[in-house]
Image 1 (cartoon, rainbow, N blue to C red):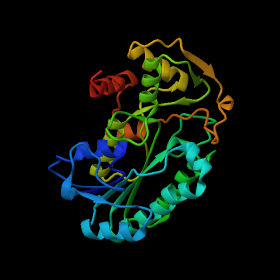
Image 2: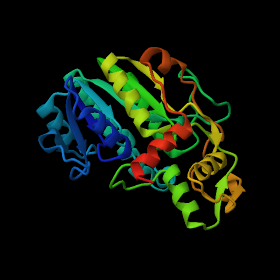
Image 3: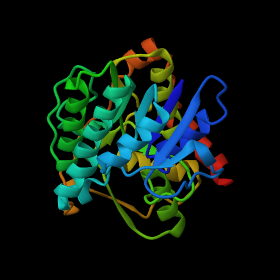
Image 4: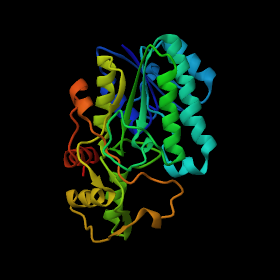
Length: 300
């Protein structure tokens, strides 16, 4: 099975590459913009590909003829999307359309990574069939990406929605909430953390595993893939502090509307993951178990 990954230099992309690179049953094709930044270079199994340029997408697809595409590349900085909606649309909508059209030509199974931010957070945790109602430009862009995938007439399609992905990978352009919390608490500087947003954080290895299970089983439709534990962002940061034995007295609880963030966040999301457990055998780590994976990878 030839599996093409977009965004292979990102956190999820690197975990997908790590899980698939030595897989005797599959042929991995990793793609990202610019040079390969994975820890062990992939050589001929890597293709530089700017997904916003249709000609580049077509060239790579025609070269490798992927049977499965896992589309993990996206503009995910919620406030940056709010500040630059054109860039957001280019990365999350136009690029998705290029990839979907190429996948359709090649009969590829297309797996699209989406987000809890397609929901307004009024009644989480959510099931796959719940009605989306995004509050932000980012959320709207990912919902539009979902619609492109669903209505393109693809041979097979899947949507994997997730929440607050955390983990360790080298050379990332952005951090994640767990690494940020650990670093901030280690520095001992006062930090403000919201107590009115509720999420179910996801270990990157678990998300990669869920996506690969979708690919191997040929599972189609929408799947919710996140961690099993729900908590406020405040509790998340406190649990990171407790796990790494750091002083959490520097944390001040605040409300979201005091931070002046450009994009609105849904107050309460979370996912019901029964479908993924049943159909895929998906079994994610509990939060402290995930933190133990992070600690081991950091050598802390």
